[in-house]
Amino acid sequence: MITLTRLDEREVVVNADVILTVEALPDTILTLVNGDKVTVRESVRDVVDRVVAFRRRLRPAIVRPPTED
Image 1: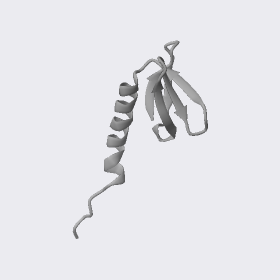
Image 2: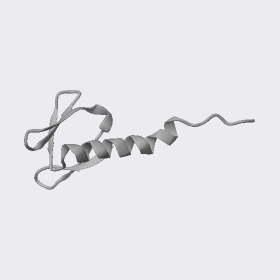
Image 3: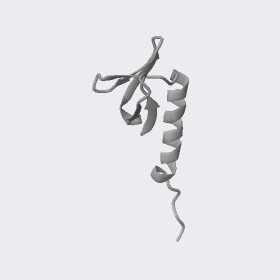
């Protein structure tokens, strides 16, 4: 989940796994897999950076090296 800011300054938490596209038109528009659109203040680059950071935080929980007995 990533926290973003709507145009009216309200925070919105978006599930990064359901973001289909991120476009600058000129506002940043997220299109979700269900077709919903969310307009946010953050730039496309900032949204991408937050998704990458989110995934990096998850990686240790998903990929654990095998333990030796």
